[in-house]
Amino acid sequence: MLIDADTHISPIEADNRISAEELVSIMDKAGVDKAMAWLQPPCEVSESNKYVYESMQKYPDQILGFGWADPREGVDVAIENVKKCAYEYDLYGIKLNGAQNEFYIDDEKLAMPLIEEIAKTGKLLAFHIGADAPERTNPKRVANICDKFPEIKVLMIHMGGAGTPDISEQVIAVAQEYEQTYLIGSHVGSQPILNAVQTLGADRVCFGSDTPFVAMPEVIEKYSTLLEGEVNKKEKDKIMGGNIEKLLEL
Image 1 (cartoon, helix red, strand yellow):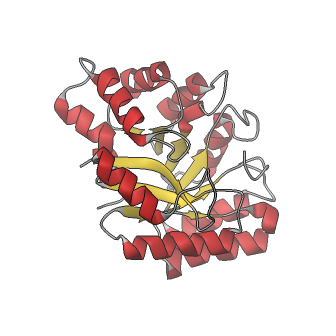
Image 2 (cartoon, rainbow, N blue to C red):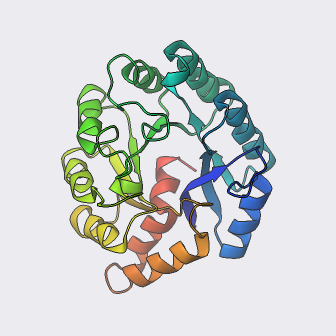
């Protein structure tokens, strides 16, 4: 099963945004079976979370919906978004993006109350971890979170890419120490992905495209070329979807 672990959809019509229908069309053409999808900022979070939920209901065999919470809207508001996404919408997890929403992901007043609530739900926790905000989303902050919440499974989206110079070496180092972490290799160079696979093995590195910012077929081709001769078929299948299938208990 081929699963893209990083895509964005939006109810807003604009040149740089895609709808759920457009995402499914892209997936069909690329041969992708399922895709993890969350909102595309900037947007109204509650409305966009609802759109993700409705899209998952419309395409239950293809779209794996994740919620989003932004503490800059107010911590209480963000906690209510977490609860709604987890309990009413039954989405697979919640994403926090300290780069787009401009907060430190381990901030005691802004972020930690949300993470504590996410821990209570038992859902997956996804973070944007990128070179575009190397301090706010630094992997050392993920380590702080893992120390406090060892029960949460954490997805590190972009694994330190999404800008230059990437901070992938720090991401891999944190992942070595914390087995509850998984790396989503979207919008990041080929060498960091290869380094992650060689260091961590095939069980904790996952394919992601960052559609619509990057063309899904091109990223699939990159992974296919990159992994050739580096891993066996079973290991490649894990990276290209099996790990997410297991994490989400599909």
